[in-house]
Length: 268
Ligand SMILES: NC(=O)c1ccc[n+]([C@@H]2O[C@H](COP(=O)([O-])OP(=O)(O)OC[C@H]3O[C@@H](n4cnc5c(N)ncnc54)[C@H](OP(=O)(O)O)[C@@H]3O)[C@@H](O)[C@H]2O)c1
Image (cartoon, rainbow, N blue to C red; front, top):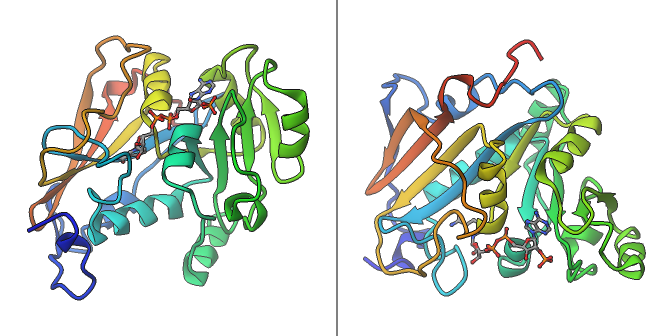
C-alpha cells in the first residue's frame, strides 16, 4: 500500500485501540483526560509529530505523505486542547499553514473550559520572510503571534504587525524560554508545538518539552531529517511512555518528560 493509498477517504479505516493503558471507552480519551499543568512562568509544552519507522519526518519536504486520516484525527484533537499552536517558520512555509479551524462543537467545549474558541497561531522567525497575505494571518479566528528578534527588520515587523501581534523574544535569536514566558504572560497555559526540527531542537535543548505525541507511520524511505535538527544538540533526556494506541499498522505514542524533571508545578 502506498502512502497515498493511506489517505484515500473511501478506504475502510482501522479503529484506534488502546494498549497502554487498555481502556474500555473511547481510546482517544487518553489524550483528552490529562492534567497539563502550566509551570509558574511558562505554559505546559507538548509536541506532535509523525515519523516513519526510520525516523523520517517528511517526504519531499512535506508531511502529508506520512500522515493518515487517523493521524489527522489525533492532530485535530491535540489542537482542540491547546491555547497556542507554535511553529517554526520553516514548517509554516513548507506546510503552507492554513488558518486553524475547529468545529462549532469543539469551540463550545473549549469555551466551557474557559479557553478561547480557537488556539492562537504563533510563528517563530528571525528573518520574517513570511507571506503576510496568507489566510492563516488574514483570516485567523484569533490574531496570530509572531515571535522574533530585535535584529529582525523593523520595516518587516511593521508589516507583520498589521496582521499579527509581534513579540520580541531575543536579540539575534528567539530565546525559547523568553518566548514561552511571553505566551504565558498573555494568559496561555497549553502550547502545542507542531514543529519543526529547528524549534524542537531548541525546546529540547532548553529542557522545555513536557510531552511528545508521536505517530509512527509504517513507512521507510522518506527524507533524512528527523524530529530534531542537528543543532543545537540537547543533552540526553529521558521520557516515560505514558500511552500506546494503535490504528491499523500505525503506532500512537505519548511520552512525558520523566518525573517532573521539567519542574512542572501541578498547583499552577
Ligand atoms: N512529521 C512531522 O510531524 C513534521 C512536523 C513539522 C514539520 N515537519 C517538517 O519539518 C520541516 C521544517 O522544519 P525546519 O527544519 O525548517 O524547522 P522549523 O523549526 O520549522 O523552522 C526553522 C525556522 O524557524 C525559525 N526559527 C526556529 N527557531 C528559531 C529561533 N530560536 N530563533 C529564530 N528563528 C527560529 C527560523 O525561521 P527564519 O528562517 O524565518 O528566520 C528557522 O529558519 C518540513 O520539511 C516539514 O514538513 C514535519
